[in-house]
Image (cartoon, rainbow, N blue to C red):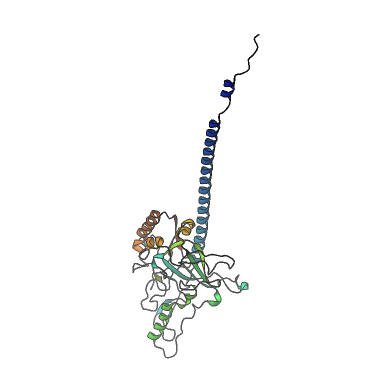
Length: 353
């Protein structure tokens, strides 16, 4: 049997990788590793973004539901009484409370402000907070500003955001019951005028109004960040009022339960809660809000331009909402719209005058 010859050097060379082949394989491996890492990072970022969005939406929904719960408890406790206790002529529907919806005073395009009295049982005295029926002055409206007035002292920096602000004044400070009494010798016209003037001024809501300076001790605090519009539309039921215009004859969203309440005959809204308030809230994402935050007290023009001229007329509600949605989408701003009809449980709607 012939002896087996050792492999030649040429054969040994063919069985090994050349330096060029090793370098090429390494380059391909690095390229594949880079692609895998990029895909992994992209997926992780997508998951983080989606999770943050879900958490933000959940927080907004929770706040929205809490606001609607508080609003649903608004009360007026109306009653029938003489128009003038010292010189009675007719009965009028009366109340010692007031319910108001008006255009946002910081910027009408932010929607409306709502002011009402509800039995929230909030007192400065912790021992009284379990007492049922304690009344509080409440409010809700959108405001743009910095976070310094209400953020903890240990936190540095400041975020400028649109926020849905809510007010809740302690029972001890409630001044809504300060209606003027009839004085001796006062004419009927003078008495009615003084009472109507009191309700027209609505001084009781000053502490929880949109013009209140917010601070750590203020009854006005943020409920939800990044709310750019809050629309409150007082209505009858959809069956009675399909266009939603019967309670807003002037075409605006405004409603005042004490408006012309001392006249004879009274308007149908005098000292009555609307049966339903349609509430809509437009919320942008925190990522978009952070991107638009220029560290200045002036609101971002991208949002202001998208909101300009909107949410002041009930007949334009859907058109305005559609136009705002398009404007935000065109600018790449993520947003969410929350809408619901809030029945006011204490409404005892009557067409009697």
